[in-house]
Length: 219
Image (tube, rainbow, N blue to C red; front, side, top):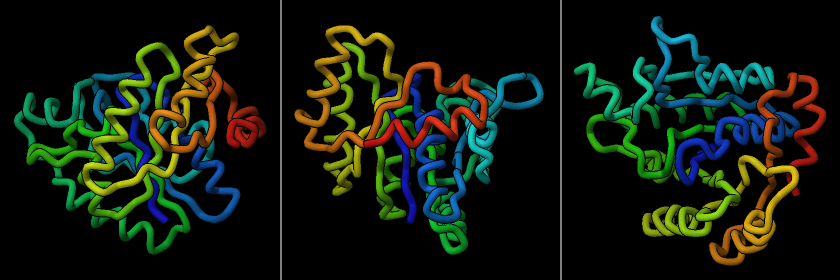
């Protein structure tokens, strides 16, 4: 099974949500997490990539297929340096090979569903469609999320991709009025079920703490 994890934008908690989904999948079989394009990493950066962060939280196998130094959208980072990065079709081929030897392949996108992953215009939506993958949308629960989430779901459906579910990437404690209302409104307005909510700050947990708490975050 191939599952693409996308977001309604940058900073919604996609990486930590992917880690939690990886542990969930690992309880049922073998799993590998793939980051097709990682930006903002390299010799001049001391930032850990998303795949490294997921491995630290879960111990699951991870792979980065393409790394770019500048903390920009993948296409922008590639054009800035004048480098070629593999097209979406090449990433799809490598992910299919991984799916032959793993029960679940989780593919973490970059930013939102229409962010370009290559210099030929290929997006995470193109990748999901080519792979015929399940798609999980990680979203914020703050004010404005209904619009962002509906737009993301509409873009997926326009390509014939029906999202499997929503995950709230960072649930605050305590929640405010907007968060409490959005928790109910997100599945209602999108028609997509809510799979779970990741508590704010979960990325700072130790691996053991993360493993112990993650099952409680899903319905």
